[in-house]
View 1 (spheres, rainbow, N blue to C red):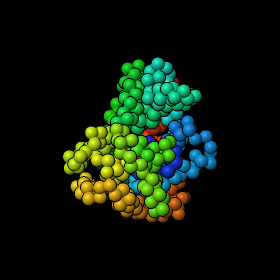
View 2: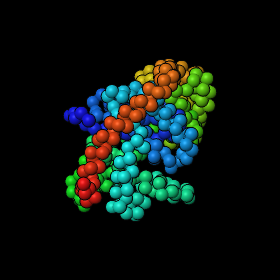
View 3: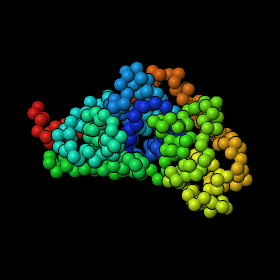
View 4: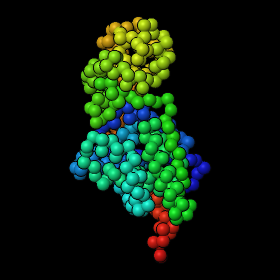
Length: 349
């Protein structure tokens, strides 16, 4: 691959279904901006997805859909490497090597494992070893930065620990990546006030049609007291808005006449300077505020949706992007694995 002076950035998303506006504002939007001044690897982590998707037909379609989503939001295969994890066998090979130097008590500290255990879920080996495959994903490419939300910072910490341990045992081999915490973006609330998540079924899809947008926004919970405490953790600049609203709630800084969840989602599409007077003038008029949000979401989604439809019409071109991206990723990963095999003593010829 052509060497540049740019820092290398890697991020992966599971092909787990339709992306929503929380995915976009929480990460995908930043990907488009970051590719301007980084050497970027954007990976479809299909082997990670095997922990939850075990239907070949669904997996294939989800992979293609996510590749289309990547292209529709503005990721450029001329600037970034867009590929799927399974096209680079070095990921699973390196994960196994890391597993041989990692203890079970260490992996039991992982948030995903602890969460599954707390919920008495049956835990697969794949879920338990998940952090090792993630570490391999990152370290194979001499990654400098990994963009993550605050709640995902542990993934990068585990990767750094793994790199340090390998370097200590076998000699200096891996860079220690840094987590790039995406600033000015909080957790986006869903239509029920909880974190927007496909697992909660409370999302607004990124490429939704107009009728779907209308239906979902009209169903947003407006009981600010019921969800206010959770929502207050997600507010973007909400403290500033709170100072402008009289009779504010001690929880959120919004009166009971201001639908907190509607406002929190609306902040993604308009500045606070625009929203504050709107929400003050429409106090208690939930339908009018939701109508305003619907209009803004439609305006934002329309060009993305049309671009996606154009890309869908040429699936062969999408597959070509993935295949080419896989070849480019394979080139770099293969060179790194040659170094690793030499370090651990298995490279004899």
